[in-house]
Amino acid sequence: MKTYFAVLLVSLLSFTTSLEAASVPPVTPALSVKEQMESDPEKGHFQTVFEHAFPFQKIRTALDLSDNWLFLTLYRDREVAHIDLTTGKQVGVDAHLRDPVFVSFDPETKNLLIAQGNSRDYYVVPVGRSGPPLSVRTGLNPSWVGGDPSLGYYVLAGAVHLFYRLDKREERPLDWTALGDRVRHVTLDTENKRALFPLYRKEQLIAVSLPSFHRQTDVDLGNCDHPRQILSGGRAPEAEVLVLCRDGIYSGKQALEDFHRLSRFRKSSGMMVRIGKTNLLAISFPKSRMIRLWSEKTHHFIQTVHLDGRPVFLQEVPGTLDFLLVLDSPLVRESRVSRMRWVPEGSVNLLPPPSGTGGLSGSSVKAAESPRTSGTENKGKNPLPSNVRN
Image 1 (tube, rainbow, N blue to C red):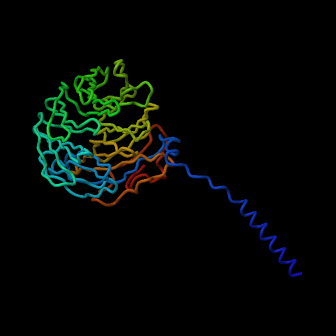
Image 2 (cartoon, rainbow, N blue to C red):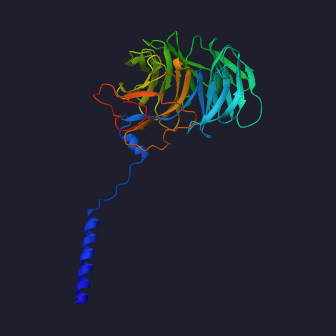
Image 3 (spheres, helix red, strand yellow):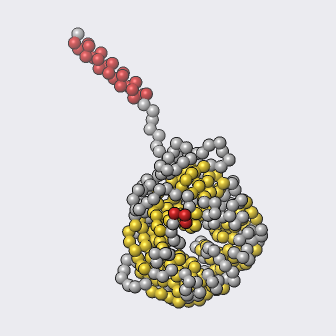
């Protein structure tokens, strides 16, 4: 009898275990970040990774992606400093310079190149090794400096509209080309080995091959009003370049001179950056104190972020969905540098949450909303620090 009950008990336990196992659904592998982003990258929200406050002054940025540094020119403080690109903590001061207005970093020579405003000089500052800054004579009022190891490094003398090519050690100019008009932003197209210049008053586009300085083309931009910036390699099939103008975004193939407006703005624009490898552009509107997310696929704005300062400078962080944002707040005499991130709906956040270190102030973002909808896609997702309201 005992043997019978023992067999019966074992049978009941086995049956119960099989039912429990059958009720557990199979585990579905999680989508990779790439798969999640490719599902619909135009749905998502902005997040502030970090924000660092400084006294009110002109600030520009440069990146050292190998060592994870963010370099800053601090015009009023007459300093070049670097902070941690991940946390926003201030690490140190690299040099004390007069009137630093723009900065670039060469990862091969480990040099910082700094344009010195109101002068005829630019600085070469060695990073990670001893040596004083080197002052190099160039054209009047250097306003931009930049380059790429594959193309070389260059200086724009803004007052005389001259574009200089530097030697391999960046210690002297080799030659120059005349642009003939004011240029607000230089675009280096590494794939096609050229520089693109939007002529502000003539409302033309100039393409110059690098490093030869051969003038490829001078193109009229049609109805474009005061071009600000150019992005090479537009994602739309019919577009070769995108041009940000004061009144809208224009597209066209420079060889055909067929530039036409894709989207019209009611507010005056400032700068633009592409969000990673998506079809999204973040466009600043300094006077309106906002950044708007524009879709190259639909030619419409899909989200607006209102700020408590003027967005005066944007820079892409390559290999991410992030960009750097410099805000000016004259009323409170403060300037802030933020790392902003676009987080696609359902994606995994690979970087740390917003940091509270590094002398951070309150968030620069006042509100985030999706225009032309009854509600926002940000509600309930807490994409930004606590003082953000949707």
